[in-house]
Length: 456
Ligand code: BES
Ligand code: MN
Ligand code: MN
Image (cartoon, rainbow, N blue to C red; front, top):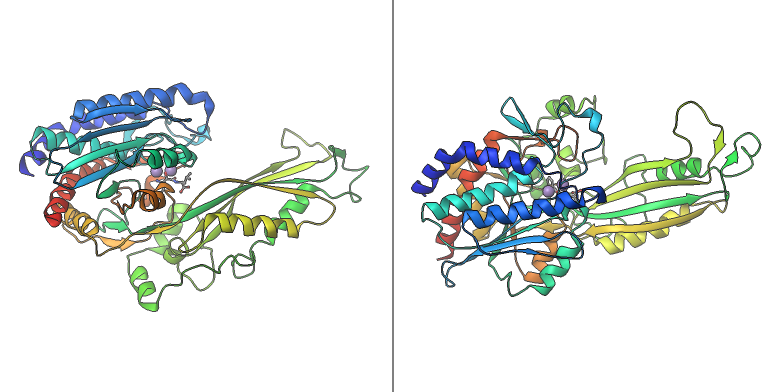
């Protein structure tokens, strides 16, 4: 990998310039106002993939945003790594909280600030550059296929159909993904699990129209008051979720597994000060690492209704709404949890209101093995460039397609992410360390090297 690393060192600043160009494209998949930008982003990625040396590059249309595919088959007898990433990003609102505009990437203190810098443009782009370097140095040791999608942030529904239809094209030995974070630059780690997701929107209706809150107030159910009471009942004093059956399928970890998880360096004081909170909060009997890794959760993501304009309007609203997400752990199933939620939530409602529960996208939790050649290759690769053995840990976020890679394609994934907690994913002022971008590009070729050797 010597020539590859030399090429990387020589081209570092160009790689960063290219990433800045990618970050200028506002590829927000959730907002239809950005449709043309998302499409333009797919074109950009396809062009760079070709330029890096991939064959059969194609912008595969779907009912939603396209999937960019490309491959390099050097020898069918060699192993094949399928690289997955996403070129879409989360909406950037609230814009006023950004120090510099979200789609005008800016470097401050060795970090690149822009929406998508860490999630996932800065991370999937490392793979294109690592590939380019291996091609230029003539050191690509095995086959590689790229699949970069544009709908991860909205649930990957069309990618799910794509992988079902394209099993032949996607034949591989494993999936390599950089879309997660590490404990720290001094304490590299690899996520060996992701949480699943159940996401619902609820609508509570009281009277058939907005009413005068003096004339009717006190005599008619206020759906916002009721919704707040119903939400409050979803968690008890121990911060456990009260939905009957919610914990039935939760896999409890052994004392040894919990001890291993808690052995990872985690600094509660820094965690709190970074977030501006005085104390952490969560399910009784579990540490923060456990609460965010191996325990399921329920969070209200948004709540609205009634009058929120300037001044006061005395109104008793007709409707109230909330968006609620539940993070799931093995062996919970998102369909089952959504059904349990809907049943319980409706049962919580008094007769004075009507309740509707509308399910959104979901995804299943995953755990990946630590005794596989793919995990070992990632571990060895990180040791080459960080000089330390990475700690296996559980990631709290979700990448719903990972469970389907296993179910549909029979492929295990390795989550070799290079982000950090401070990257502020989905938040204002998202950023990615230039150190992490460069380290990722250096580490990926080592992964290919060790994986190919381990499979021989
Ligand atoms: N890259 C994240 C997931 C992630 C981040 C996993 C950090 C582990 C550590 C991904 O882009 C994401 O945000 N996923 C969504 C789910 C999706 C269905 C909207 C999430 O976790 O909320
Ligand atoms: Mn992501
Ligand atoms: Mn994301």
